[in-house]
Length: 410
Image 1: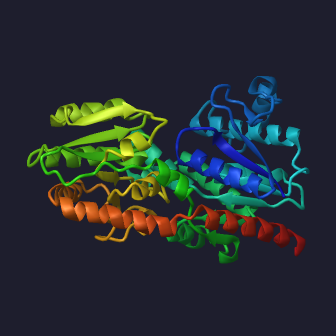
Image 2: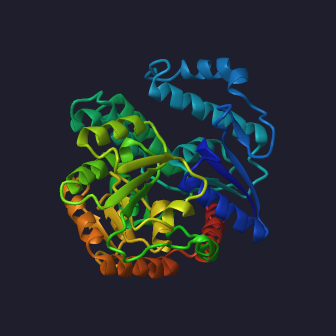
Image 3: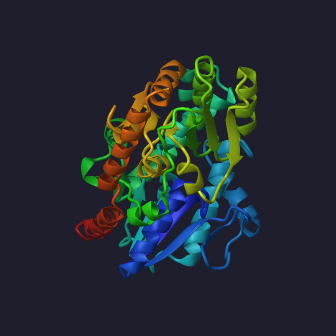
């Protein structure tokens, strides 16, 4: 097969999606498939097939895009969040049309926006398969909430922005021949909220190259009670990730124990406000912000506990990596996260945004060296069974074949 992987967002880009795409692409090529990746160039803000020249630029098509957007009904406020999103959709569509979609057997979208864009212009015999790495409308809700623009949740739900992105999402669902999800939570949203037929949905987990990962994983955990324990978070520093809840919990924890240090690894728009929150709580000397890293093992190998306090998450690679690094993971009960943990066996789950419960769970792990280490060992064994890259690749090859056949039978 010749497969076009497409993303509305930048690739390459630090984080789980590029980790997933690069792993899958390598394995598909090894299996004899041809794979191109069409995604946004973060430096130029143009779309291109990675490894090929940028044949279409925003500068060249700026007037054409503006003309098309002027015909929108109702009109989009110029240079608003919605206007800029629609502008990028136009640029993606023009770029894809320039490269030509007829040469591909499958279009494989990494988000629901690109699924809608390419689904609209795909050749009749070329299906769109979409992986939902996140729930767009939920992300938009939390983004709008973080801005403080709307005083209540109800006003967010009735806002023009929410309606616009709901429309994008529904279009992407409708124009996808097959949709891949990683959690029962996401599948339930598709079937109950958006009424997507179950026959269109495939549910299976992400996978990792477990042997390669474990060869670099050399955990340095010990039961030395005098050693300061390391609490670790890795990921984007954005509102959606719920890091302020973690910091609140650390503030509570510091009242009863300071035999720990927390590393918040990553970068994002909330970094300064999170650092200020640490100062206000008097824990700035206990919480470290190392920034972005290209060597995640150097942090995972030294950590004792991993925390993912997200407000919404499907199946983050950061949790998978922590489990394979023999770390007990503490996750919120939001979205697909609880599906990644066997409560009390390989990790712990706390109510989303509940810093008090999170603090208590952290204290229980910090003060029980033997139990914490055993939980981490259980996490690794569980992850080795769950996160098979070979199984994931096989599932995708089957899914691509089913998508092609679904059009042949129409």
